[in-house]
Length: 520
Ligand code: B12
Ligand code: SF4
Image 1 (cartoon, rainbow, N blue to C red):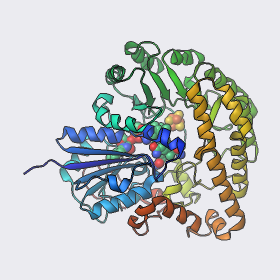
Image 2 (image 1 turned 135 degrees about the horizontal axis):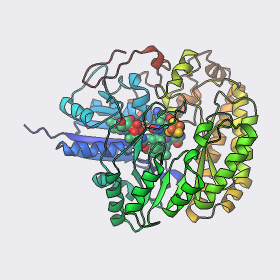
Image 3 (image 1 turned 120 degrees about the vertical axis):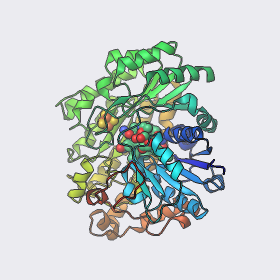
Image 4 (image 1 turned 30 degrees about the vertical axis):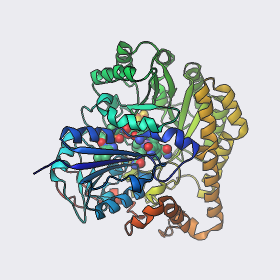
């Protein structure tokens, strides 16, 4: 008997059809690494693989692998409802389905209702278990997780057959995703990696991959997916310098400000680092990762502005990340300080996230659940931007939304956009900033937040939902999900727009490494 399985792998980079300019330029560049790795592992086990990266431009239903035995889906929480509908559709055709990725790590107790398998930390042995078992598990799927992150992972060379078609979909910028480390030594309480040990991956694989890329492109562009790039800075850069001739690959990385001293930034520049995304998060907390210690308020703004402007002298594209609504913030001041920072660093692009409790991502979420501060917004909106699912400690909702709108209007005013344009020297970063500011992320989000504020003022039921007086989902949200899911809406299982927002607190979910049902 032929044991070769037909396997489909779907990476949901987008949760909905999207042909906006930024999505067209960038979505294919946001492909995840793990779905490609799973493709490599499945082929190593002798199975055939069809890999799809859904960027929002494809017709997802038409592209679904036909007659597949087993389908892996990778989803962020914002794509959970899309993934649940797809799983239902695929299971109705006889396929066995597996969910992995950020949503599976954060909300396994919900996802087992809609998939045959749900995986947390995933190494090759977990995949081998699934391939051997490959059978439907109803009504509850099996939750499998390794005890730690994998110790080694296949590199770019082995993933190339999955990377190449994605890059063909990317018209302007072609970003190759790489990973040099997992976990993080810092412990930012809201972060999924606050409890995951830092672990570098094998530098030899990385060096081989960089050499390989130099045979594929005249000047490759690499995006590091490391949660915090450059923790072992010198080891990392030594390895890059060993195989990459000076300034012949462009790199993009997320790194904490504490690692970005002038000495390190100069070395990054020499090595072609063209974009860095440091996290500032707050003016009143998390000073350790920006090396500002106990400094707060305006002192911290000035200090970090100087630091970021120093980085901008060497690196053309800097995105500074903030979390809005943290418990340490109160009143208008944090927002006014961020506006001041935007003025002081005209060349940096600020990325704003709303404080979000992604299920069991961080132990801090247990605290929010214990204090009944988590609001059951459907997953579709838990994206860091479309809903803040933690009730703010020090703000009324209308006050909070007025402040984020005012910050958005300041950041994405034409005057700030033009100042950013002038302060950004390189061609692509310069125009990328304009596209981001005038599309969904800038103008779009300000308009969306205005709709929320308007609803908060005028719609009692809407406000009651935010105030936890009711759990009945306002039509506003249901309509968005229905519109954005399109034909997949009909495949969304009953009840799948709701989830238990306190599941982490309630369940005694013990992850299994062998195939056992979980007790929920
Ligand atoms: C790199 C990164 C990005 C990159 C690349 C994204 C990508 N497609 O991979 C960029 C900058 C594009 C990005 C964007 C976003 N991100 Co991001 N990102 C990360 C980051 C820093 C690292 C993730 C990573 O690759 N780790 C390395 C891999 C190997 O480890 P891992 O993710 O833990 O995966 C393990 C398992 O989950 C499993 N696994 C992973 N994928 C799959 C797939 C399958 C099929 C299977 C079976 C298993 C499996 O195996 C791995 C090994 O154990 C994390 C934060 C963090 N510290 O983890 C946030 C994080 C994943 N991002 C997050 C968010 C919210 C976003 C955005 C929605 C933000 C926004 N509003 O724009 C977008 C969504 C983009 C998209 N749809 O693709 C959240 C996700 C929370 C959630 N539950 O949804 C995280 C956790 C950060 C946070 N806020 O806490 N991100
Ligand atoms: S430095 Fe970044 S990756 Fe590390 S714990 Fe803090 S937020 Fe997470």
